[in-house]
Length: 233
Image (cartoon, rainbow, N blue to C red):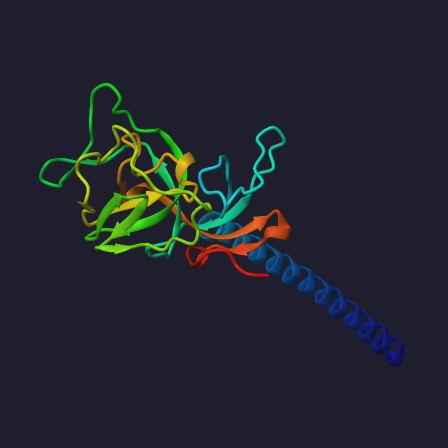
């Protein structure tokens, strides 16, 4: 009789242990799933933020096959944290305010007719950072007295100033610390730092730095070295 009771107790103990193990496994799976989801949310909220590119200003680097009638835009991931800004970087910028330079080279926000900021998010390439001098002449961009080779610019497109531009009659200009001079790669179809509606970009106007183009998949590309020009092959 005692042996039967012992067997029953052992069976119940084993069953309880199995149930406990199953519950523990379920809890671990749920915890692991929640942690994974949390990490993914954090990554795509603060580190990799998707951006849909609209317009022709960064052709041929971005949107080289852009057709607004069918909406075939390039899509990129930008980093919104932990990045430095250097020459050649592609930035996503909130151009809510335009900064020009006064006669002493100090940045100011203009007022009056024709001086409003573009008032929208733009994507452009860094041409010069704080402390560097920029000049535009003879179809070339000159930074710190050196002509930029700019292999990323749309082929056959010279760079010229824009009539009644941001810095017309002021070139060469020195970019103040904490500001950036930016331009689109498609120079004849880009509203950028040459224009009064854009002017210089202040550091706190930068949303993020473009890292990769992930769509269309056939054109997947790392954008952090796009300043070196088109890749062969």
